[in-house]
Length: 144
Image (cartoon, rainbow, N blue to C red):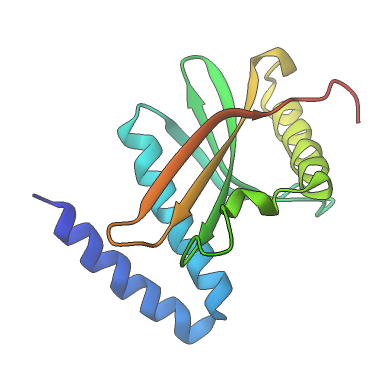
């Protein structure tokens, strides 16, 4: 019932972002908004968005708690899936940057590395948007 209100707000927010940002940035942020709500409906508690360590090395789209585990979520968004899954863009360089940023966040939060998980979320803006969640998609490397 409230879904139409969310879609209306998402559309208005997206149009406002398009006036300030390029289309790729606005689409990415819209995907993060949808991913945020998707995860909250599934029992995740979002504690940070777009986290960057002071060194500037990497960015984590969403940081959440789920069942006693600190979850770092990378969100990939596309307007269509004509060129394959958005997850194809998570290459080794991106994984390394994610791991560095996550290690900094976990250390700062006092969370042992054994209680950390990396999820990927794919958002394709079909009608309605298709969201696919890949839990534990990146193996946390012990040393970087």
